Image (cartoon, rainbow, N blue to C red):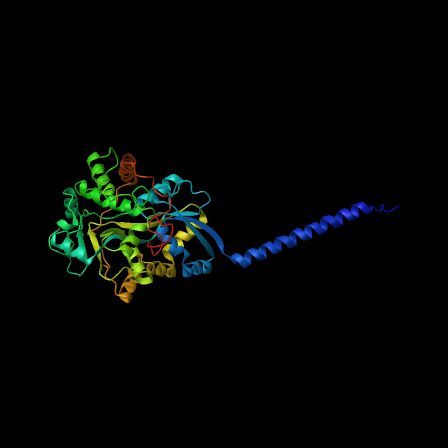
Length: 394
């Protein structure tokens, strides 16, 4: 039987194919090794967050803990009212309030959400201003030693366009001709300013949350005046806190902030000067930081942030309140902070549609007044637990 004829070309082809297969396999193996060296066995996860949480996610201890749990979580900040729109390849979004989480779920067709931590809104003021406000019947020291601020009495002062020099007593310089106004972030972009709107609209609406439907023009006009009277909005949303801290009472006598900003600044610095007082508005509102997962990996991050004891403790270290109140209490006790561990006089923000209608009305007033468009700098209040970093918002 004749043998199969030898075909050199065919042999060379087989050799080339085999060699190529080996090279591809080697390159793939090298790629896996390189990826493992960079990421280990960590699964990359992308998030869009309010920048009051950027410092938390970038904390080396948080990064390390997520790594131990098998994830490399990277986040980028975005303005609160746009946070959930066009998330691209993000695995989760994390706004600073439940009404924005509601919007995020609606826009992205998901039902799940996690609420790993929260923080109440508070006011910061310097002692001379607090004494003057006390004499005017707006501020008082409660039995537990905490300072309270009567938001309804404050609204009465604003109706009369009261100036600091007009307050009773001599705590405030007679040369201070500025109106008694709470300084806020920009309501067109910022979650903390939206929380201010939630509280004031509740009071202006007869102590009831505003319902979806036609906008009450009187409420919108009052809110718009209180924002426009502050002057040109901050260039970035961390500015009100930083200006209060760095420029003193002459520039920013009274500022609306996340409690977590103050706590984190006192723990990690830079801290406000001596003589700064924390006042709890009556009523106030909680900023409920929420994770809305868009993928399975995002769902895992939400679950871990909520359920992992170490991540919860780290969140408390950034000034946030967690479900296990011992974390926050331990931090307060360790550093001797003058903050309340229980906040009772709290209202709930209105539904997304109602609050968005109010904010849109305020935005229209800014436009009509000729104010420049807001800076697109991400969520509220930057780093420092919501305190001080480039590019904040919130």
